[in-house]
Image (cartoon, rainbow, N blue to C red):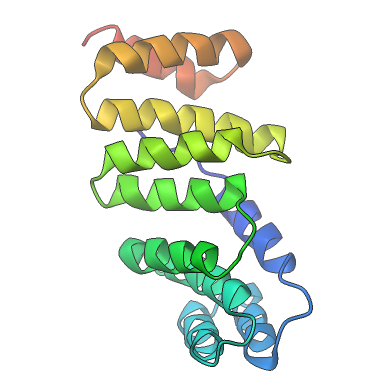
Length: 174
């Protein structure tokens, strides 16, 4: 199963939410927006090491690492953002869950997706993405019955999702 991913838009929105930041964080944002993820990671790492806007720096570092497909680095950075006072948002939890899925830890991913779903202020698109990712986590754990149950609930809520309809066809063969 493929993850549903709205990451490009989510990453940009998350990056734009980093306001009132130090120079290194601002420079990191510029690099992110330009698609220069290595340079962005370096700037955010420098800001985090200076303890200047550490939560924002770690969030930015997580985005840069995600874009570089360094999922372990991204997960660690997002967790550090939370440890340094970042708001506990569905977006952060979704990123951590997706990192865990990519790293082969669907059980941990499921936990983070559920934490994300429980947060207030999630957009409908983000909620839909996280609910779909819950199904991916169950599949990753080879718990196909739970995946089917969650997919049926998902399709009741989002009946026009063609990817989910195809996924149901797949799960019915399990």
